[in-house]
Image (cartoon, rainbow over all chains, first blue to last red; front, side, top):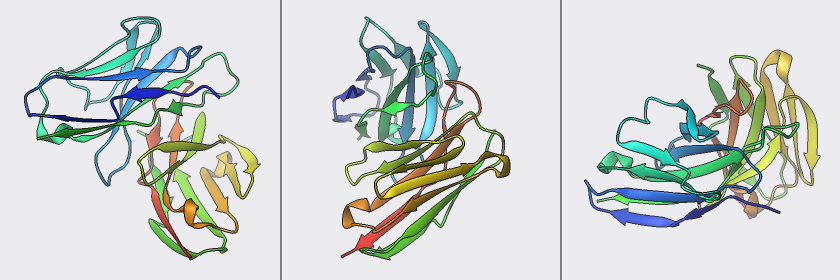
Length: 115
Length: 109
């Protein structure tokens, strides 16, 4: 069964550094999402992406965040200057608008630790 | 925005017991999904169920959209069922999912 993949599984970085989290959505899906989960808390929406542009973003997704689909398979989340409070699990998800359901399929997550 | 409330927040069961997890939501929904977050942090899709009833092995789910709630049933629980169960909803096609705070289930041998 097709699945969403994410790399790396765990990233440790110093405060102020840039990080890029990578995702490969399911191949025929057209909607892509990033969510995050701070340890012990609920999952929060960051941004959705369709047709090479952001379709929706939350107030968390400020100017230090950006997303890109650099080629036909990858979807990336960049954090320009990491802060301690960016430490969280980041999930990528994708969905297929052509299906009768719009189930979002989640990747295994990237655990980001900012020191 | 839409509110999602899950109850109970914590649940402890003896292996073999049955349980019911509840999700209430404050507005009409287009999509409702149940997830299981395993000890490694992965979110496992259990059900896509904006309305009606579905079953998958020992798990089943029912959503009553007109009354704005969904129930997840776990029968004959096993220790591997332990983890956090999340309900998530969206109010438009392919739009953002809003998650509840989750229900932490511990199944003891």
